[in-house]
Image (tube, rainbow, N blue to C red):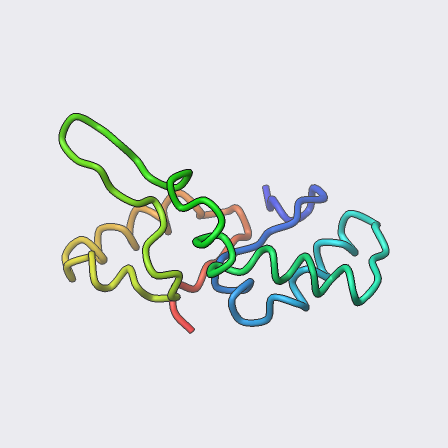
Length: 111
């Protein structure tokens, strides 16, 4: 069963980062909500990574007994490479492909 056949809007951080204004327009169209260019620009500015980091960065942290870590890192597409070993990347790819099989979904993790 292809998930895209059921009226779902499929997105990714990569697509958003490539062209945020177009992405906001696509979401508005999917929701059948006409928006002015001014409002699209305001939404895009509020949805930018840098805007989110300056507003309330403490909302994006995780605290456990073992550590305190930020949920948000750099906001850079492909930054995962700094955290994954080649072996972990291979395992991740294998598991994701297995879970996505037959869904009609494909994801790119780099520009």
